[in-house]
Image 1 (tube, one colour):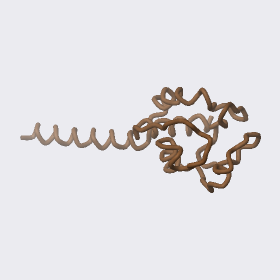
Image 2: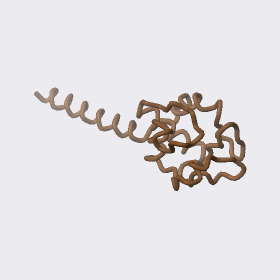
Image 3: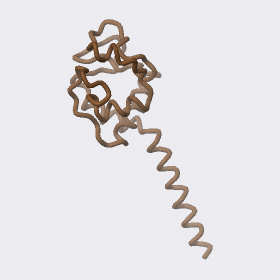
Image 4: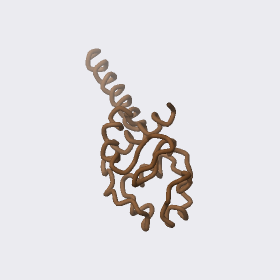
Length: 126
C-alpha cells in the first residue's frame, strides 16, 4: 500500500512538473520550431527581412520597430505583443490581424507556440 501511495505521489508530481514546463515553453525546442520563421524573420536586433526582426518583440507595441514598413492593419491594431496575443497570432495570424501582410498559416500546436515564445524571450534577454 505504501508503494502505491508513493507511486501515485510521484505520478502527480511528474504531471504537475510537466504542466509547468508546458505552460512556460521550452526555448531549446522553440529555437527548432523558429526555423520555420527564418525565411521572413530574424532575431538579430535592427535587422529586417521580409518581416521585422523579432528581437525584443515580447512587450513591444505592434508596428513600432523603426525601419520596417508595416501594413496599415498592423499599425492600427493597437496590439502589444504579450504572450497571450503572440500565441493567438502565431496560431492564426489572419484571425488576429485580418488585413495584415503575414501569410504564414500558423502554428496549430499550443506547445510549439509556447516554445517559440520562450525562445523569443530568451534571445531578447541576451
